[in-house]
Length: 331
Image 1 (cartoon, rainbow, N blue to C red):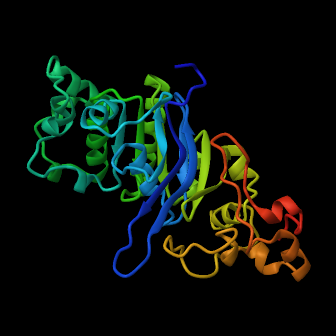
Image 2 (tube, rainbow, N blue to C red):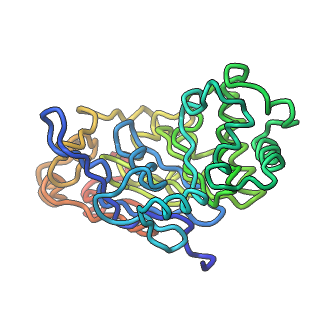
């Protein structure tokens, strides 16, 4: 692997869920390109239902894509049992609810040791468990190994989940809303832990969240997802200080100290992956489109012309109105 080779990437990845309950197929992930570099933290941001959790699960091999591929250090992921088992030594998923992720009948030691045992890594297991607990901030580890989940705080439970992921010494972790269920003070501790792991052991991470504010504190790059597509991507400074896509601006405007005079409210219904609108899929809720004149709408054609899929390291944002300069930045 070269230094600029991503440790994990999605290449034109699409996941379509079959029809269910009288509803049509759902394009949960639609032509996504996304990469995570070595020692890099990428924040994947979007509303609930936008497809980010499905993308996260596809990246760790839990969801098989309809088309496109996942690559680990440049090698396409194969879905045979042996290939997936080897892949998951290098790529670990951390879930939102630590209480649900931990077996209430399993001690902390057994929870952390479960991964190495499944992979037949029993030599030096005691030391590996202690090292993983210590890296996850549970020190001294001997104080925790014989405890059970109900004896731990929410933050300690999340640290046990992280320790379990670290026990396999992965290259990258995919953390799906890792702090959403925690108190504010504990959220800061867990985010600091992930940053420390990047700096100390070169761990890469994709952190999935609905909160753009999280990216301020942890990410190197940000990808904003809407209705199955990445609509804007770039460095933290590019996306959070100089957002271009109207959807990103709306998400940012509700943050404290965002500089916005008033929040840019999202109009219309929440995204529905079974009924993706024609043209730009954001245009029915777009403030720029709502404020555009008929001439500007004709030029931009947001309701008729689809946008190109963003490359993993490509355009900062995809937006017809931006490209046509039909409206000013103040809209």
